[in-house]
View (cartoon, rainbow, N blue to C red):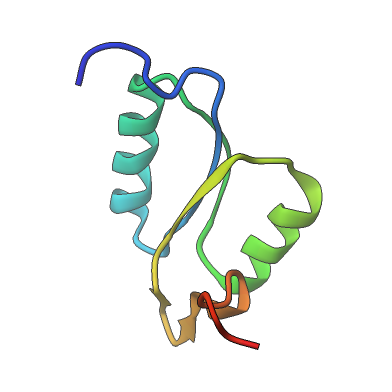
Length: 78
């Protein structure tokens, strides 16, 4: 990828596999994004949401034995 297509975007990464999280961080930074933080579990993700403003998040659906829906409920759910 060339250019800084995500320049100015603040992104949170929620991923429990360290190597995947690090690869995502590198790809997003190369595209110009600022990584506001990374979380590997629901509790850490919720704490990060309370501390940081961000434009987007990359979310792993399953975090060990937890589902990410506690962080971001599916559309149309109540």
